Length: 53
Image (tube, rainbow, N blue to C red; front, side, top):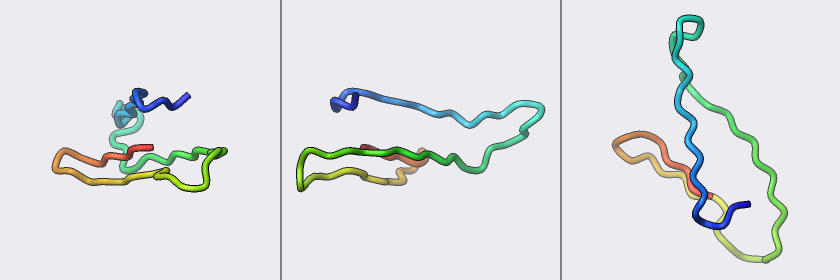
């Protein structure tokens, strides 16, 4: 589960068959137990994209 300490990293898959990967697509389904809360934060720092759930 997501307990606030889980980190997942998805590096771009660069190899001879796929010279570059321009974007990643993710689909996540949530079932909430609270009426209010922060579900997603998207930020683009200087080093790349950052998403926090």
